[in-house]
Picture 1 (tube, helix red, strand yellow):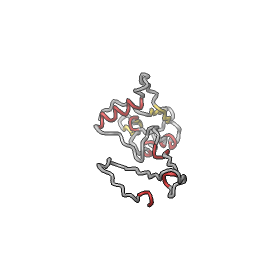
Picture 2 (cartoon, rainbow, N blue to C red):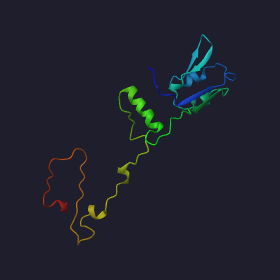
Picture 3 (cartoon, one colour):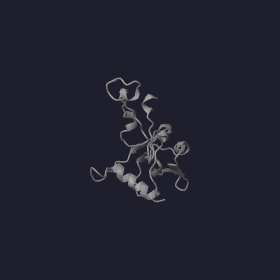
Picture 4 (cartoon, rainbow, N blue to C red):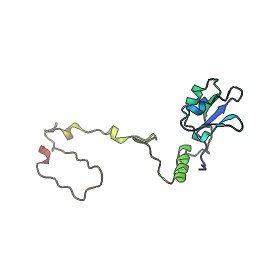
Length: 155
């Protein structure tokens, strides 16, 4: 499939050092390196590279260098390169970009910063002059009706 995204990594292969041993072909699980038998040359599909550097480490002659692609988009606060790439990925795939266990962006996780006042969760309350309080948090859909019995603060 044709993509409009540039590769994230560039692979520099020093042809003078490369001995065509195909170690990089065998070590890469992402199909980045392949052997072209017609030209007797190892080549790369850079768009498949994830930057693990495994091929570079196992290369016996150190003929490979993996580096980040230096592509720059026009500067704009609202349309950062990360946002532009995400939009292109979504347009090409037709779906939302999902990551396992959370978010791959630097957004704050509010559940990790929730603070509860001890007077709201202890019984009896720390300050007996105040009216007892109960903290009820509903997760999910907002209920149509909330029923509270008269003894709820004594549980």
